[in-house]
Length: 292
Image 1 (cartoon, one colour):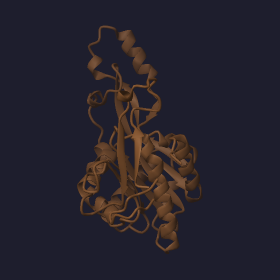
Image 2: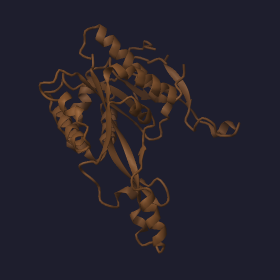
Image 3: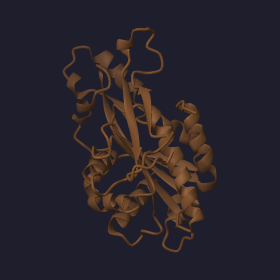
Image 4: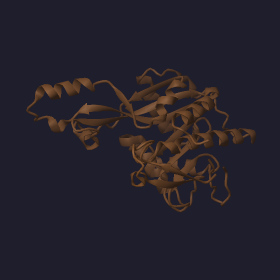
């Protein structure tokens, strides 16, 4: 997989075609498949600010207003040789997906990083992810890389292995150049969800059916991003957490997954030791069927 750089040079192969309808439709009919050309680019401050900020809003969900996302977007764009965007209509178009990493220690004095750090520490403490408190303390010598990644909901999961492979390669090159990316740990922010009984069925005349549905979905957690299931296996710790700004009881009905169930999103954290990150990236590629 190659990334087409903004200056027109190829960093690795530039386009790939992917079937966004799944691995096997069970039919030889070409009309059942849709091939889309995706291109990988370095983050570009000239064209990507609004697109990246939109994806960051989606990543942080209802809590996005707690952070200065403009400053966070500027930080991402200030390191164009680290991280990637995925586009369908050329360099000048908005990104459909992105992945990058920020050094929390290096940027600890920036307001948005302080906001994020306090937020993440409070969520981790509530879920007993105790390692994060010491890693992000002011006197810690740990170098924690914050991985930020998001994509539009209809993007195929096949774009993810190249994004992780590229960031790993870029980090290794940066380390050779004595840049501050020799991370002891990686902290990945993501999202999960639980299914909840729909409030729209509150007037249902079949209370036994509604009661059974609510009971069955009470505790199970699902992944928005399938790669998270793999990353868990390589994580030192992980947790899901409730957003600070929760919606009202009927909000989940706006995100209904099935006829009788609503979707309740949650934030998600995964902490991976630096020495295990390369293995995690390889496992993601194997699981999601990366092209060789």
